[in-house]
Image 1: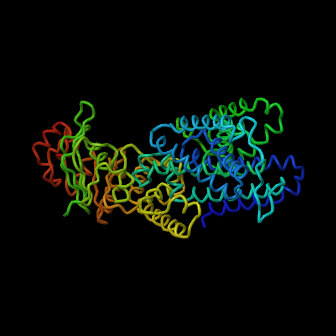
Image 2: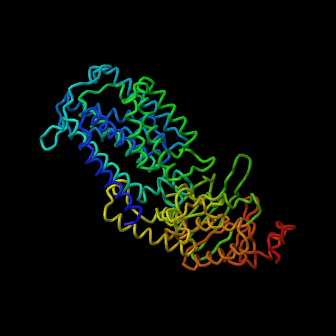
Image 3: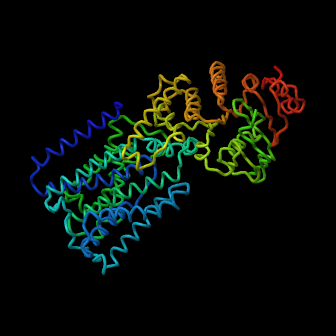
Length: 318
Length: 260
């Protein structure tokens, strides 16, 4: 194993140890709840980072994939009595298909058409969640979603969900790390930096862009399904475009192209609106402002900045 | 020598400019075919057509008996046709070793799912990719800078890195677009020696170059383009005596080393 590989697994083991110890200290269910929301955000941001940080493509629609995962899981289990894990898998498959349909035409074009397409997509999904109230429950939300189960036992408490959500994060990080350090991951970085040379080296650019978009959407979908079963109630507001901006901000705060960066970004920004009432009230302005300031002053993100990573002068921020 | 690359009647028009006018050219394996001519003669356009970067208006390109015109660049790489770029196209933020490992893309297998699950096949392959990349880096004398970001390399090293990346996947034909442009005499000499060694591995080389000294020294055959048309073809010795070529380079003859 390379030193790089060893370092990752050491860090992952350290994270696992901290996560295992945290519930001993944090017993207040409110804080456990915050940690659980952090975990779900980390999961989405990890997938988003593969797309933004490695392949250099921006999506402003990941809240919609997050929401589709939540609503499909919720409705299948709540209205149609499906088994939750089966619903989670089916939701992920449907979201993968939707991402494929959006990604195929837009990622073929040069320039960032994906931003526009995903933004529009998120708006449409939000409207559907609001308007199809026979199915989705409309603005007041969809209720009565059963919890996930573990060998028949419901994962209903904040603590049991904590183990599930952070377990999913560790798995998600591991899979993403494997991808990044593979021929495919190198291909993604290459197509971002010098597309012509990447193609000449044998990297199927269009297909890789579409596939990484699909993978990142699946991360969001799984997080959404978990979210739905955790809360038991979901509302359209949770999955609007402002949530998408929030996710992109978390990705950039931590540092694009750094998987740990996604973790830090989500861990740092998720609790702020919950802990500071001022931030809660002006949440959207807050995240928009952070995004703006970062792109101007710290485009390499926090982790990138700590590692002394530079962004090429005049180079692309994305 | 059987031709590995066959170009027939290749024509490209950019607006009112006839960049290539019915070009015929063949390049065999295990030989260096130089493509020379004044600026704007259509040399890079020819390479761009062959490598799928530019779509010609008409013509045919055959690679190893297969029609490849219009084929995507990554598919050509899988068939064993790689190239370098006149304007450096290194992956600046990746390190030198990774740059060359990307060059192994066409010669390796495994998609997203296999990569995320890190299947045993991929782990073994990863070791082979790394070993090959290190071997190629050593060949180009870049092994000492293997772990530096490519953008931090000196210009000459970046030029060699482009060649290393193109060679890594064991191609059958390499298109080199001005590989020594901007290099000093010593660097040029050294790179020329390496290009000859690449040819000796049985790889076909198409060399677009302005450095006439280098072209005449290492090429097996030379094709001269002017205004998009092929005006002469032959061995370096024949080309240096071709009256049409001399006329075109008149005044620039000495500068290009043609009469030297």
